[in-house]
Length: 285
Image 1: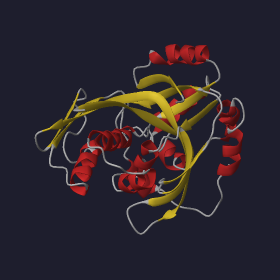
Image 2: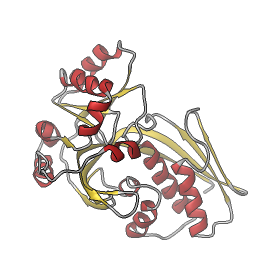
Image 3: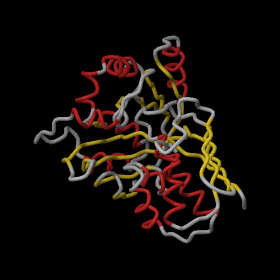
Image 4: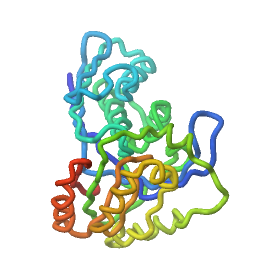
């Protein structure tokens, strides 16, 4: 086997609370990750030497600042792989939107290299490696479609959701960087309005995602919505159509939950005429 092609899914956060600052550059959080069928396409192939990265997205970093490149470099160094690695990324997930595209691409590169070079690693070993690349990478390394993440998001517990849900993702044509949002976050002692364990319990029911529509929570909205009025406006617009609406991660992506696809399609058609937004109609993985 000389090459392998994988889909790298986007994610949304159905719940995100920030517990405290750590001694490193991260924060301790508790979150609920949910994978989507919106995916990048990653092809990894064996080359003679080095690492090369190509993409159909001109805005995507191609060098060491790219998480997929970092993942390939880590794997080559960790396992003393002398062969080179070529990475091709067909982007569909918007960059720096809070949907985890870069982390998912990195996880796919790690998975591909494990298969290409017949490395025998268990999930615990993979997550340990993934954590060094980025906080969301362990979730994408896992086979879980939905999970509670604790620590920096690397301590995962699978959640069994029983039914799919249609998702409309609205992304303002801008980027918000996670580090910027966390720097502006003021931690307070008040508890979140929703308990993560209660939300996890709701998600276990039939139609759990739409049942949970009024229980979504993201602590980072306190920072993002006041500072970026266009994100706040996007949430208000999507709220006119969806059963539940929330900022994903540190944004600027806003997602809406729909019980029926035709309702999501109607919302997409209505909003699409406003060119300030990118729209992605998808569903849970």
